[in-house]
Structure formats: C-alpha cells, structure tokens
Length: 166
Image (cartoon, rainbow, N blue to C red; front, side):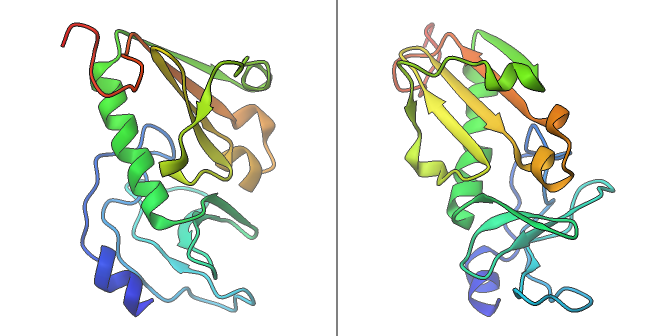
C-alpha cells in the first residue's frame, strides 16, 4: 500500500465515463473489516456506489462489493483507460453506447485489443477508425448482466490518436 501511495497518491484523473466517474483521486487506505485476500482502497469514489474501488493482492485495479472483480491487471491500466476514454470522447465524430446482451453481440472482427489498458473485466479494442470500450466490471460485481456496457467511438484515425479533421 505504501508503494501504491508513493506512486499514485493524490493523482486526480478525469472522470471515467462509467462507474459514476471512478475515484476522485487515487489514494491508498486500509479497508475496514476482515479481507482474506488483502485488498485496499484505491481512492474515494465521486458518488455513493454499492461497491468500492480497490487494489487487489497482485496490484490489480478493480471493484469490491462482497466479491472481487479486477477491471485491469494494473493501476496503470486503469489510468490508461481513463485517459483513453477522455481522449476518445473529445475526438470521436460519433459515440454510441450499447448495454446488456447487445454488448455480447458486438462484432470485434478486425479489432485489436489495446494492451496498454491491461484489461480484465474491462477491455478496449482498436479498429481502423474507431475504439470500443467494453465495461463488464459492474455487471460482474453486482451479478447484473444488464449492466454491462460498451461505448463505440467512431471517426478516429487508425490509431485513435486524433480526430479525422485534425
């Protein structure tokens, strides 16, 4: 936890488009109550939620609500995903959101995973002019498949680094 706090403590990120914005700032805190797998808080959330943002025993960033769902295999993955979402939101010509079973029906042929986000429950996919963010963490932690969400950002160059008009 000290190492986490030393690297990430006090970092304020733009709000995540899901999870009610995510933690306001990153900061480590020892959880209350017994935790056999030893997770600790990743930071205080922006709004009241039925789960907490936690760091897992192997450095994963995820959600905890009686059960543990790692979103990204590293804290860096969460930071990259939030930064990518902020960038894609600002640069995409169009944005479309799908939820529930429609997420499972997305065709990802021709898309490559974005390795920088170190995705586990949440993943990002890059196409020739679009990015797709798939958020399954809330659905898994609350056992509510209808909560899975995907955001499709279209009208980006092949790397999703700038809008087509840039």
